[in-house]
Length: 221
Image (tube, rainbow, N blue to C red; front, side):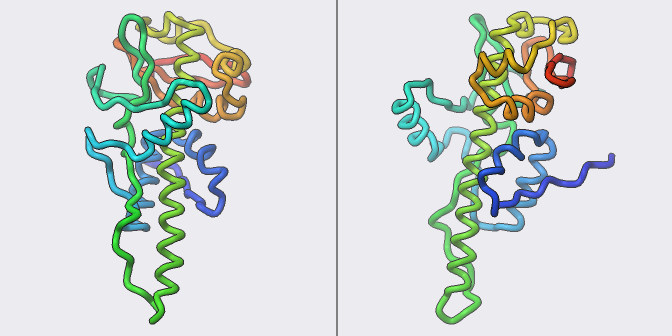
């Protein structure tokens, strides 16, 4: 199979990183993460299935300040494989990000320094600092990607409840992107970047979005 050229994470532009990740399919993103970890060894490590995410406490504090529900991953698998980015399940319907669709990572701030290129250690220190800063951007952006995907799918389900149970997604009426912007309070470009890339799983089917202009329709993934 021919793959598209890999996405390059440019850590000189951290403000654009989340936008790039939103528009990257999960299969492509897995290759990007593997490449980044190989090029920056000792900077991140996978979280264990029941290990506390260092960003959870920060998220709880931010949600409290902003008066909104906190975004938290779940470690159980409410639906059988194959899995998609987001689960849609239960009665009443729950919409939750799949915490294992991509690796959940933590930054290894206490990892040993690499060997120094100069006697005073300055070269190694600068390189290590840049690597850890890039690792922090990457880990936060991956979590933001999952949070935005969850918010978007929740909006889709609220606007088109039948999609949670239907076996043929093409039978669901298309949505205008403006409707999703109003429902989710996400930026229009965030919705546009995400809508045709993410996949969500219901008990009946895995659903993909089809973006045509300012309209989003649905199909089997």
